[in-house]
Length: 336
Image (cartoon, rainbow, N blue to C red):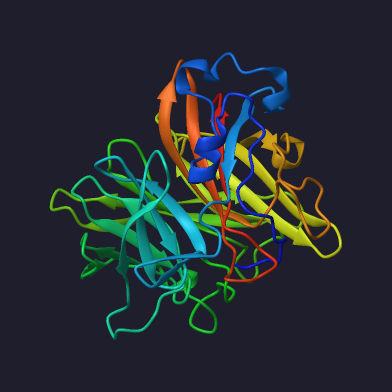
């Protein structure tokens, strides 16, 4: 889904610990992990979430002739990289520290057509699971972009008229629970006939042969007017859920929630961790109305580390290759 948001300026930073040379190099604005637990109150988004930095360094850039933007999903990858998925059929591998692209892999469906790719998992064997909200679908790709297989999707989750899912509102988030045996895809919006705000999370169970078969279906209630833009598993097996919306003349709403642990019941409860409108701006600017100039069309999220009971969470916005939006990364420290 592609709500409109603002166009920011290029990379800025206001953290006193960052040198001017790092800013010029386009590195993520962030304090070191050792100091993150002792962050001053001014960096707090809420009692449980602090903003450790942001970066616009990749906004409106290219790598190997491919536009670096339209980023809808993130996943912690191998060998010091973070995988970033574009909904225009490209997968970037970024350096985990600098977030600069190392390489880009083109993706396509079985007929060579482009994907509306929205969800991403870097699996333990080095392959990628990618969800597309066109059908919707979940496909497995090799590290060089070849299709290795496709997961079965229940008929009622297919896009209308074949099923009950609304166009551009199905598999927006994808995550693998700890242990690697349960995959979960989150719908962005309710199915036709479901109550407003009630979205479905479909799970698959990995068999002994490595295949995934449909499993339990969960329900999750969003706040009014918001949809699910991403889900990410925590090391404890609970889910971080990013809810997002846009109101013309007002701007973006982006809230981070923590759910119950899937498996304890099919209806997932949630706890608000932070409304990102409450985060410090760190010098970010907006050219359209926003509750906070830091906000944008945030769609991708990944847990990238863990220290002293807190999680390092990386979030990215989808600029839709639009001059009034930006590719922006946020680095959060979350007590979950």
